[in-house]
Length: 404
Image 1: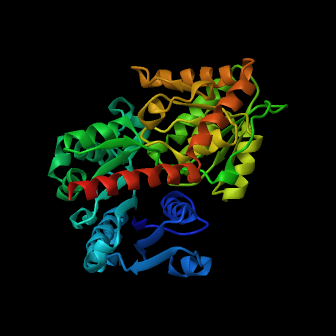
Image 2 (image 1 turned 45 degrees about the horizontal axis):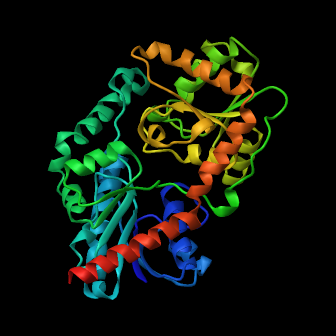
């Protein structure tokens, strides 16, 4: 089929949204689709150097306003993205009928939508997240950023209908792919025609490991993620300190961000300096080695569509302790993860996470957890995801022809 792929960020050898865009392109071309990719210009050289057969890239500039960036980098980036959408629509309008289906893959968010719903070709939007909101009782973990978080929460409620690009995209998409039930609920409120579940994240086939046995020696708890309020790195430190009251263990923190000093201060205050290692930013291959040597992943994000580290850890056979909310709550992973419900009193949560960590590290089910992790993750490798998307393309393009 001839697929028009909208991937604002798309680049080989990178993670997050750029990596997601690239994996969609490579996986779809591997299935024989003719893929035209609308993407932004900054990664032009890396994409051309990759020389990917079966894909045509159309690079569209999306300059960021320097003056707005000085006031709010996030607002400047979002404004550039919205301008890019308009330019992408203009770029492709004259040849839109050359394609069987349009698929928007990055950014994978609910709020900013896509202008490509205006094309006379069926649009698949997503997978997207963004319908989830942070629990209000836990505002202290957000510190000074809580007013911004509260504003985001408000914009995800009734005010979401006031965001024209979002509302029109959801109502006019032939199919909206969502990665959690909160986003599905938001899309229903906006009048989505058809909604289906699909993770936004995926794994390269070679990432998938084998079930393994629990590592010997002092247990290693792993936290991976940027040190941002919504990722709750301070909560991770507090939970680990609770675990250390009951057993010896080490904590490795892979990631950097604005909460670095607060994390360091919390470690010192709780008296666990000798047991915690802050690695800062870590490359992908080193991340894989961390997954393979750790005993458990601690994933305490207070707002997350789903979470790439959750899927990556499962793919390497590493059990997880996570909060039972948002995309994690929707994933039926069995023994692979211990999910901790949010208690009414935030002060109770570190202790409950500590108990969950102790359970994973001390019971006799670690090997079974590892096997369950790999089994679940195998359904979300990129070739499997692309095959599922390909089936959707045929269904939607076929129904469009019948409708005509």
